Length: 119
Image (cartoon, rainbow, N blue to C red; front, side, top):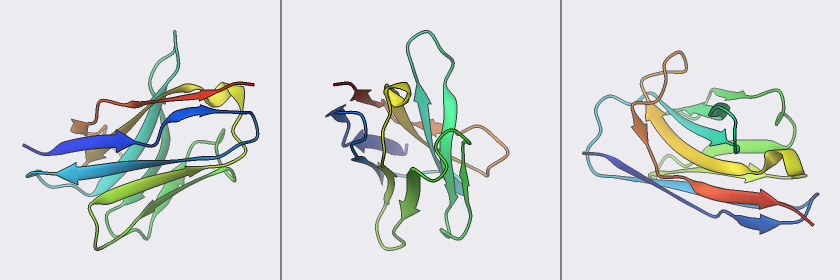
């Protein structure tokens, strides 16, 4: 069974940056895309960014476009999320996901990492 483990969360001041990493291990069924989702207190989980396994196609939520960058190294089982110009509204638990494609929800999830943006 495949596993996803997130790392890199923490406390950062508004305007600061964080880099999240998701490391995959074990055996997965067909995976065509990797995702970063987030869930703030009292809100539904929402898509932040997605990347195809080739790395050639990416997708972002409007709220993070121009501030966040998702990336994947072909020779490593990791997917990163570089977050710049962080705002209080970005505070949430961030989850890594793996799935078939951009059209379907991830079949695999990590346990999440907390990101808190506060002065």
